[in-house]
Image 1: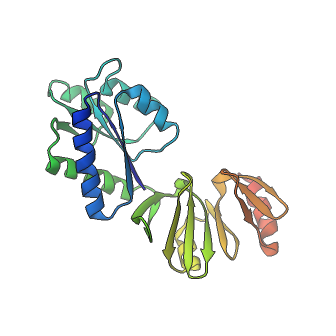
Image 2: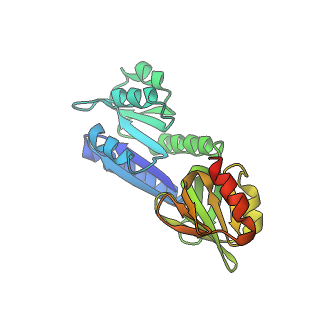
Image 3: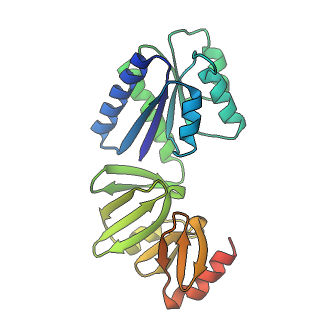
Length: 232
């Protein structure tokens, strides 16, 4: 899922950017959600609940500017993709000190925005993750850390994501599991594979996942499962 946050205290610009962004992602067949905020305070609160793929930040805003907010994110170690928007070019040099993807002048040009989104997608493809073709949402790019666990249901594979979404696609469960990093994912049952980083407990031949779901562990895999959990 491609999550975008647009932060601009001028609603007309954020709404235009949202329309353009949603249209181009729909055309690419990429599952997405775009949220708009009028202040960095609102955005910061939302970022505690959502891992955004891309931030479109207006540089000049009341209270805290987009540039100040981006600087705070970078000092905190965030590597989120950032694109700055502004009606003035005077801050361009300062903006590049926080390593944005690019810098757009308002009103946002559709072609330049498309290039910025493509840059973000290409950068995400280089990050550790996998692309799936969900039956409902289309092509979805998922970082490994966004996956809680996977389940095989007849000929379908179900991915249970950290944000509560479920993604379903046709495929070989065994072949798909082989693509996942073995130091992170463990096939604890013939029909289940878990992201060990999101397990919180092991008991009665079950893993308890971070969201509270219980994932069964086969009898033959229980010893290995306990060893892997103890090694976390």
